[in-house]
Length: 345
Image (cartoon, rainbow, N blue to C red; front, side, top):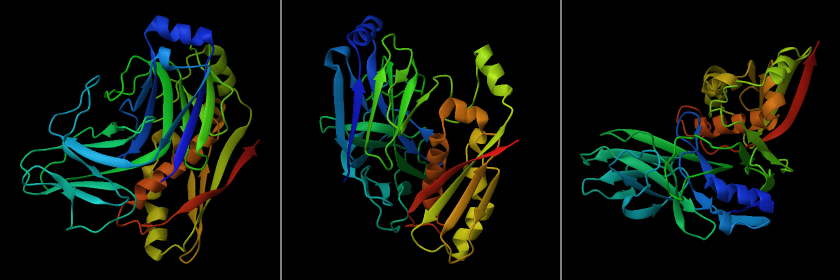
């Protein structure tokens, strides 16, 4: 179990602006369930009166699950039924005929995702809920599935060690639709377990943030659709004279099998978000350890979001496909060994 800490700095003017607008600081954890990463539950919220000049939010990673038979709507409190059950990476879980979420002994542990099934006689569709510990050690919802698990159905959920923070009117434990009142700061805690950022006095953005953080425009959804509304910025980006590419080299800790090489070569490309799709993927032959992912025409993305967005996307996709039994990547771990820029004039 790893410990994480985020330090959020603010001035008296910023805290007054939060209070005047009726905003809290909202924290959300990312969860992948087969597509783009969802941030759909207010995991931790801090009222202006709870915020100091420099406040540290610390937590331990531990996951629990529950379920509901109701579809979770925006601003609704996410409430499960029955007892929470502790999650183990790759675990298989099922709601049985009597309506209890239990470990599914009929399926083997697989990958790193949590797998929710409905094949033991439960007659209703159910919506899985993931919980994690907040800064006070309480279990709080971090994700609710956007649909239910039907009879003989399956939903796999993978928590991503990425956290978003912004100012908004959500309360802890509420569901939301990823609509942000202010600019978002996003922390990638996959490698670095700490991060920091300072919110502007007028809540217009963030500054002085750590190297594992970047800002996310509230008009950009989790598909990273790039729409620049500022005319001067748009013209500057569109007139960049250089074609800039990004190359990431991934190193696996165990040798790739034939199945893994085939999957990565033929299917990995389609798992990426549309606006962050690679131009080329090269995999070392069976028995090798390397994956090279190339992106072209990246100048606009780099200017707005920075290079770390590509590392985040590659890690997200690899964690997603690791849980696919056909990928040959079950139990694999990896590191991003290199990130390179290539300029083509």
